[in-house]
Length: 153
Image (cartoon, rainbow, N blue to C red; front, side):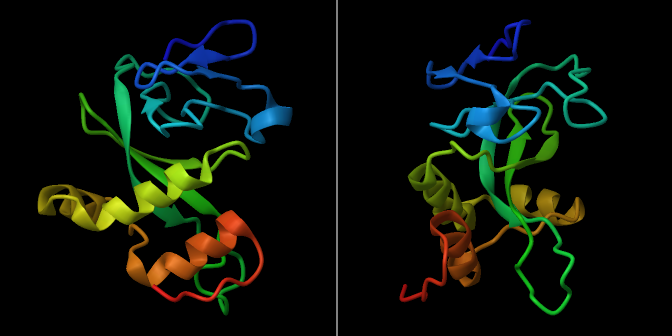
């Protein structure tokens, strides 16, 4: 995924699709993951959008989590976030879901998170990242599909 200097658009290094980084299309300010396969690239070092990382390696989507919401009485009400891990250096990052991200691809990332190896799960927990698993299915469906969706799985 090599960002183009004019507006940040890029071609995904994982699936090869062209990705628009135009804010009005994706709804995020610092686009670095593909809306089709959800893979990212290790671009940022200290803060979203700084593009200071020397690594530049692909980042694999590991699962979904939620950003802590302001309403402490509504657990799981925070914004849905995508968790990535750099395939080269192992750095973890949490990224906002973009408006044009493929809902089916997000559901697939959510469903395979429970099969992550113990070493990866331990690294996530040590970093304070708790992936949503089966018990979070309703949260994921509600945020991706809107409205109240009853979990039947």
